[in-house]
Amino acid sequence: MITVKSTQEGLEFWIESSMAYPDIKEELFRKLGENKAFYRGMKLPAIFFGKHFTDLQKKEISGYFYRELQIQNTVFAEDEEKSEPERPMPPQPQDSPKDEVERMEIIGQEGESLFVRSTVRGGQRMESKGDIVVLGDVNPGAELIAGGNIAVFGKLRGLAHAGASGRRDVCIAANYLLPQQVRICGKIAIIPKDREIEGPEVVYLQDGKVVVDQVG
Image (cartoon, rainbow, N blue to C red; front, side, top):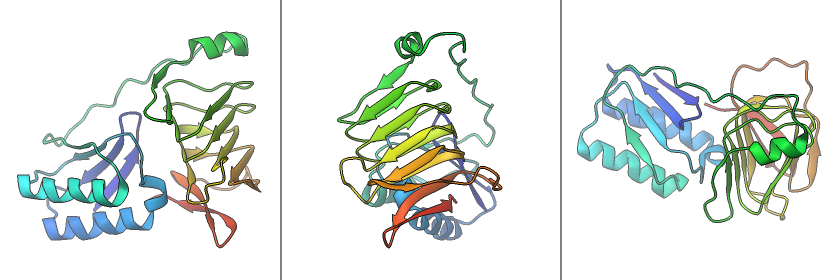
């Protein structure tokens, strides 16, 4: 069995050490193929745990990520155990939105994409012509406006608008999807707050309608 986790360090793929490589390849490519809109073009690395791969197998897996998903960084950890990463402390809530914007840690900007490692608080508005990746929560009253995709490795409880420039092949993904409102290419969806959340979810357009689907 392969378990997929979204963390602040990247997309983690935990693989049972007893699995044969043909079975790993079949299940891995199936999982990725079913959720290409979520995975495609993400700047965070794909990290593999729990299984030793040969150089040829690593090359085949890395080639798939690069060719099919445009993910350039694939990491293979030989150790079967990994300690939980220490999470960064968010800014103190008593600060004003202006102070919080100044203290937000923007960790990188590749092309037109924006990467933020902190909580996005109410009153803050993050905009990018490309993708937006947040390694933290997005609180109520906060806004994310992206020409491309939006990925939140935390709770999305504000407003998120992907495809703001007119693109329809985009998605909004979050570990916990609890937004006030989501938009895909201008189409608005209100997601009920009282529904059960079983894990990371992705929002995308299908036949002109906004669809919410579970990742993995």
